[in-house]
Image (cartoon, rainbow, N blue to C red; front, side, top):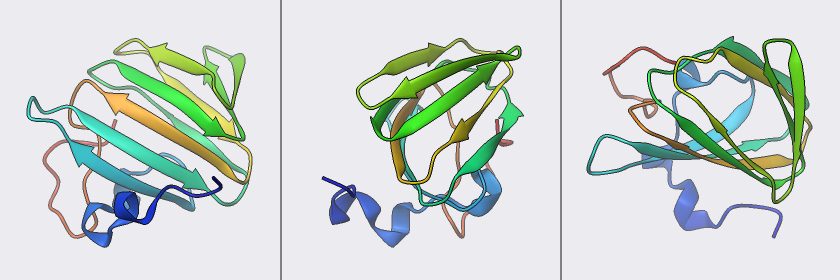
Length: 123
């Protein structure tokens, strides 16, 4: 597979650009009953993710490509099939290679959908 299935990419679940830490990335969000969220991102161009932190844990899995996580100047390359848990409050960013697809689970509300008003700040 080179793309997430169409049912995962419905326009109603598209993440607003203001909720993205990485420029020019395509993302979709799904909400858990407890306020947690799952996001599916596809990066079509090589880009850098702005440093940011969350008030909750983040789990990430690289489905395809490579995402280099940067925590405290330490570069952690994650390739397809590799996963990582980022503790809450940890400043992190990254570098993503064109064609990379990732799945993220957040222990809280991470992103707004396009057209929604902000519930929380991006983090």
